[in-house]
Amino acid sequence: MARFRRFDVVVSGAGTAGAVPDMAPTDSMEALRERRAGMRAAMTELERAAAASAHDRIDAWVLGVRGALGRLRDVVDHHIFATEAADGFLDEIVEDEPRLANQAHRLREEHGEIVDAISAAAARLRARPSVDSDDWVDALRDRLLVLLGTLARHRQRGADLVYEAYDVDIGGTG
Image (cartoon, rainbow, N blue to C red; front, top):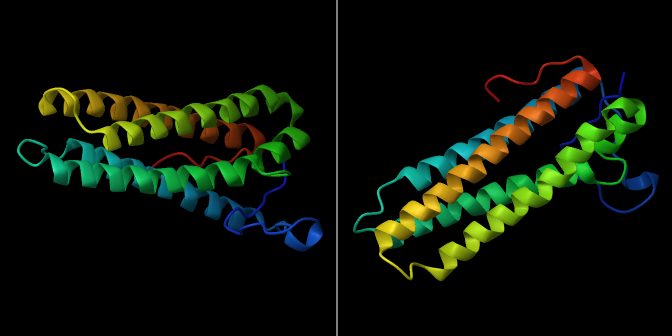
């Protein structure tokens, strides 16, 4: 069974001075659930911003979506740091449970796809419409919904990996 680690501590520096201490399982799982809930909240904020009316208020819509997308990017960046850092969450799981290496590898690969999708959406928001603004908004909403679906599947695969490694269910509302 894999050890539990707190992920709400930012690692700074090298060596043992900046290492994240091992913590009790309940503390670590609670921190993981809180980060998971933060991801869900950022996803919900983006979904709401994208669903807002853009008709005759495209500038306000773009600002709302851009802000929500930026906050989601911050959450995703923190997530990637916590999971992919040297000796981070995914390395720890694979070290303790080598049978889960393929699932961990898949999650790592998805991180790049997620960051690329966020970056592409941000670039489209900066470019503004070159066609009818309603068509542009519809096309961007479609891309954002695909991104949100990708994130939802990624979160589920992450929850499944945690369950496989720790026999702890972190799914549900978070």
